[in-house]
Image (tube, rainbow, N blue to C red; front, side):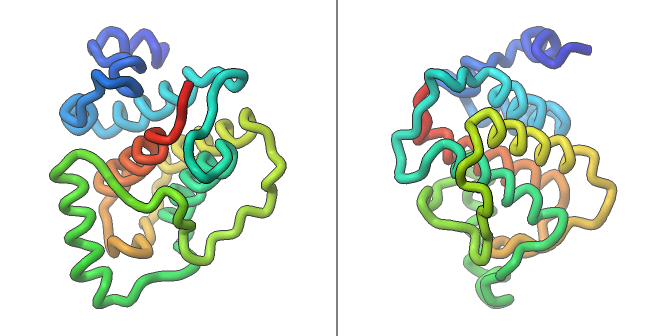
Length: 175
């Protein structure tokens, strides 16, 4: 089924997701697959000729950063906070984000130990890589790795974290 047609049939639109009308309830009440589909639809809606970053990072860096986070959930994060941090502050922070339906973090803070070797890629390449990371995550059959700050997350919670992460960074993007 065509993703865009399915989404329109559910009453959840990209405009509602990206604009002021977006509510976390729409996303959190959606099925697991639909949450990733909404993120992919949002990425499909981007016009690379008009999109701009209002933050400290270039658009390509934002998309690479979000893709790295998704990839690291499958292969392992390069550096971690202490076990004590993850089991207290990290777990509490994720629970709060999830309960509030939104993540709020320093949008210019790198994932500890993450490297971004191809800073000269185009916006289209960076969007493609982020979409590929979401799709790989969606079909990933293996055991997920601990988050560097939140600790152990199941697939549903990781999916929620990845989508909230993208939406948090989206707050600095103008289309």
